[in-house]
Length: 106
Image (cartoon, rainbow, N blue to C red; front, side, top):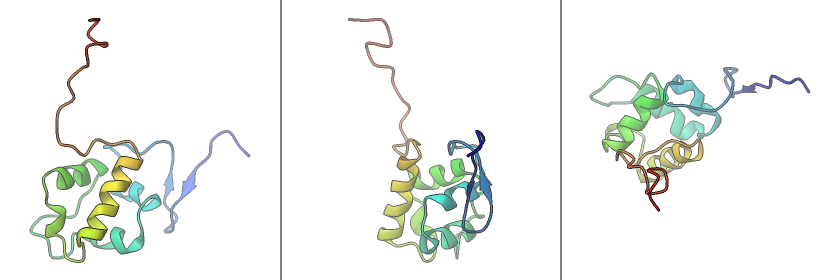
C-alpha cells in the first residue's frame, strides 16, 4: 500500500484526509447513505441553495433547517447529524469555552 491513501466515494470522487468544514459537500458521500446524500446534496424543494461545503451542512444542521429539505425526515436528519459527529465536527451550535485546565487554572 502506498503512503498516500485516498478514499473513493461511490461516485469516484477522491477524498484525502479528514473531513473538515471547508471540504466540499461531496466529502460526506463516504459517511452517508444515498437516501440521505441525494436529497441533501440537491436541497430538494428547499427555500435555499444546495450546500456547497461540509460547513454549509453544519450550518443547516445547527440552524434546524435540514427539515426544510424534501426527502429528509427525522431518520435521515439523524443520520446526517451522526455522520457530522463521526467525522469530528461540532453540531451543537455553541462556541467552545476553554476548560479550566487549558486556562492554566487548577
